Length: 156
Image (cartoon, rainbow, N blue to C red; front, side):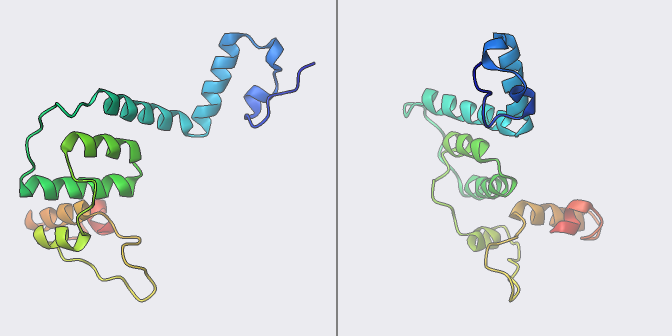
């Protein structure tokens, strides 16, 4: 008898490779990758790689004006915060945003947002919410609400 596949979650372990049909193996592998949260990451990475492969330097993109540069930087910060690495890779390439990040304090200043100072127990740039949250909180206050009137604003 052949050994059972190692490192695979229980649905696949119970079968030996020789007794599994192609469809069974495919279904078990898909279930395992999905259970580990890897399947969506693989799909996103594949989309990013395909975009990069098809994206040519001949594609002419409009130059970034100051407002778009700042807005894109705020979106980049949110993507990083949310862990959207592959979406971020496509976004940076597609938007022509520079690969080097703009300093967070500069972006906050340009967007007229106050930069919170970390407490004595915090390192700079750790556990900070993205600047987009502050923009939403400011909009809520301008509409007449209070900063804590929405769950989103309460986190900012």
